[in-house]
Image (cartoon, rainbow, N blue to C red):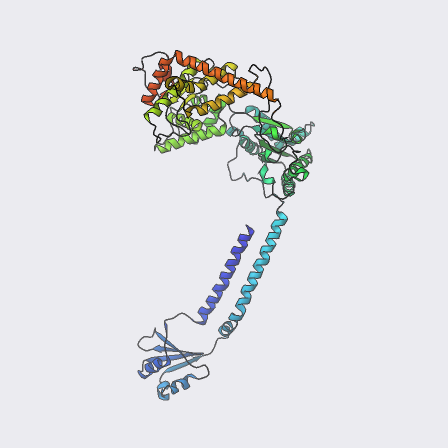
Length: 623
């Protein structure tokens, strides 16, 4: 940036010099209405008695005419000859010249020397500017090389911006309580020091993406009213070894200088991963940076009044030295919000959007289990986009309900035209999912069925729980497997043929069945888990980790997974065979209307006359 600014200044300087020379030229030769002519033409005008005066400026003969005083004729004489000799040689009599006002201008010293020296001096001036520019650029590069290891981060300016407070962060009340103590320490450190209490030096915020870790850190800074330094873990790591460690030292020095202060390191796992993988050894840039962070956190004294906040969604990969007491002694878990918290989050984001009076955010909170704070913010934003697309001024309930499906499944693809056969097959497929879900125990209620394509899905059956579930039963898992197999089985039952439409269902079912066997201990293999939940290879973990069972056990696991999936398919086949009339009823209604709501589905499954069923394709609250 400095180099570009210097280049701009140099360019301005060169333009100024050129402008000066242009001004000199203007003063040396003023702009007027001049016409270059030959000496014979001037003699001709003298013979006509049409010359008012003649001005001699060095070798220029400037003639003013009587009939047009604004027009001047300019001719060149010989440098060694006088003007009178020149005209005499051309046949002009002395008596004629005496009648004309003849003026000889004395040469200006400034103009003379400018005209004489400019061609010699100007190249040297331009060369000097060029050399100065090169030396200045080299100096700037040297300065940047000296400051390459310094952190460019400063405290986030909060004076001119609206501060984030805990009131703007809904949910995670337990996490707030943990962080309120941090704010109290920064505001009143003596209160803790006098009783001998030691506030944690570091607080690690752990949670899934979108749960509000960064927002919570900003709220701590806003409540405490202290300088807030924010940096990403990846900004420490550079190509050259030692640069990251140097930046850590410089940043921590700045934070201590501004104490009491908060240092927030986002994505801590980028630099704090487990050491000792053997990749790069002890000279690895990332390990050097991590070592320096550990040393700097040990260097904090009790009176430093500096708190280090860090956020990560991968606590399992962090080096144990970071998590020991004296460094990140406190770990705050940011969980996904429950129904009440989702409603509170929706209210915060809905304040920025005009809403219709019929909008029920509690109802929306019930329909969004598993949504994070970021998902809910995106939900309100998508609803506002839907409203703007319809050219209405306020967001209605239907806009938010539509945005739920878009966030979960993707946008509708009504422009994609299906053949009659494909439309019918999709209807039977989705009817199979819905009917099997209806007749299996501990299954979530069906909220909506549609054969309109969304995202990558040709159709969908939307099932949402009536309340948040933190514990899942084996019965619920087996019912979910049967529901996933419902579309596959309905196709096979109706057409005696299989299509690729069930590929995603089979993928989900296989993954769930494998977790039932390997992770939850709900199979014939007994109460034992197999392998690691996360098999990704990363720095700091051995490549051999992830499989802690023999080939024989692996074969048994495969057999058990296959048996669970076959049992689920048999269960779905039994339900579809017994309730084939319901499959036909639901599929025909989907072919006719393309979309079916919760109430209409429940009425059809209850045996009501389909001709008198109230039309209802919207998502309604669970009954």
